[in-house]
Length: 87
Length: 185
Image 1 (tube, rainbow over the protein chains, first blue to last red):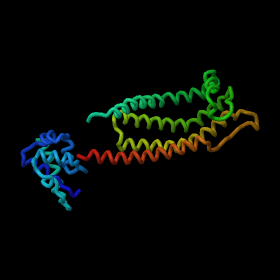
Image 2: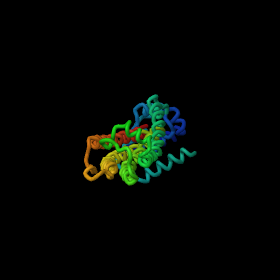
Image 3: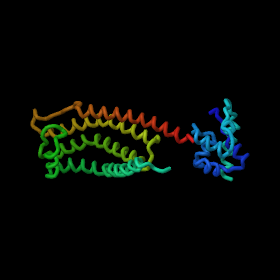
Image 4: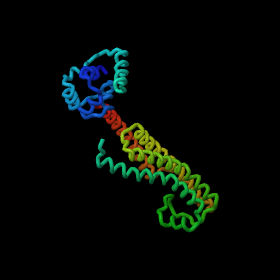
C-alpha cells in the first residue's frame, strides 16, 4: 500500500513505548502493531485523533503517501517494530 | 472485547446443537441397522404403523433376510450423506459456540453442506429405488415394484442446496468485511 506509517519515528522522538501509546489511545498493543507494521487496511478518524492528541502531532507527521516504497525500507520497518516491542 | 447478548445466545444454542449433531452421528446409523435387521420385530412394526410411509404404500409386516439386506444397502448412500452433513453441521456449530462466525472455515462448511444437499438428491433416488425393490422383491410375479424417479421432496432438496450455496457466498462476503474490520485500527 502506498500509505506509509511513521508512527515509530514519532514514538522515538517522544521517547514513548508502544504500550504507553496503546493505553493513551485506548486500543490494544496488537492493533497498534498492525498500524505500525503497515498491515492496517484502514484507520478510524477517532483513532487518528487520539494518536495525534497523545503524541502532539499532525496526521501528516504519522502518515505519508509514497507511491514506490523500497522493499528494504519496508523490511527494516517491520524488523524495527519487532525489536522495539521486545525491548 | 465484551460479548454482546446476541453473541452469548448464539454460543449457548450452538453448543447444544453441536452436541445434538454429534449424538446423531452415532444414533442414526445404529437405528438404521436396527430398523432393517429388526424389521420383523414388533417395535419396528409399531414405528411403521405410526409414521407415514416414506417409501409409499403400505409397509409389509414381514420381510425376508434378502429384502432387509437390500433395504439396508439401499439406505447406505443416503445414510453416508446424512452422516457427512451431520458432521459438517457439528463442526459449523462448534465454531459458532466458540464465537467464530466469519472465518474461512465457516464458509467452507456452508459450501460442503450445499454440495451434500445436491448429493443427497441422488442418494435419495437410489435409496427409494432399492427400498421399494426390497419391499416387493418377494412378492408374486406381477406385484414386484421398481421405481426410479424424482419427487417433490427432491425438488425441495434442490432448492435447499441452491439456497445453501447462496448463503455460502453471502458468508464469504461477511468474512471479507470481518477481515477488513480486523485490520481497521
